[in-house]
Image (cartoon, rainbow, N blue to C red; front, side, top):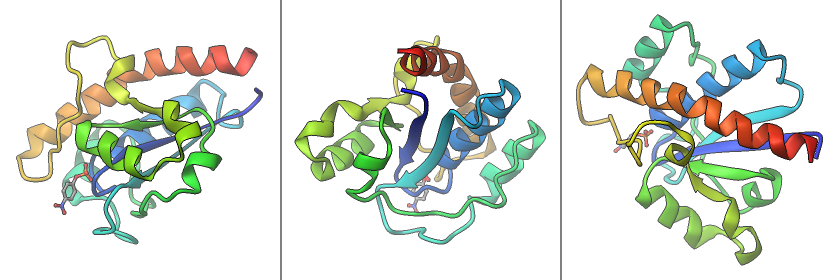
Length: 160
Ligand code: 4NP
């Protein structure tokens, strides 16, 4: 495989998954992998189609040098299971369940939790939408933590 496409998935596509997309795009560019690892994000709901990321997510990301301003919400659809050839990195169990309900059986193994790749004991990226700013910082901490582990798996696929 010489190119891999990863789609990060949460509920609204305005908090967690755009944050993950920005972290992975930024770091992938820094690692000169931008042309080999394609990143995108989507929501399982249709609530925020066309919306910019939540202001709090944008603010927290900007402090760390990530620009979310040009991202827009979209809803995951069945075609994504074809287009995204390695996995859909979901944030929590509700995302996994929603994806599994939509997923053709042959692509079921593409649905993975982002925190499987992290070093911390956290297993889920908790929805920060109804909480305070600290929740958005935690999301970024978790995405940054998962980066190295996910990159290792992606790199192995790229050379395989
Ligand atoms: P996300 O967070 O899934 O991380 O984008 C949410 C965004 C919006 C809502 C819930 C969660 N909402 O209820 O509108």
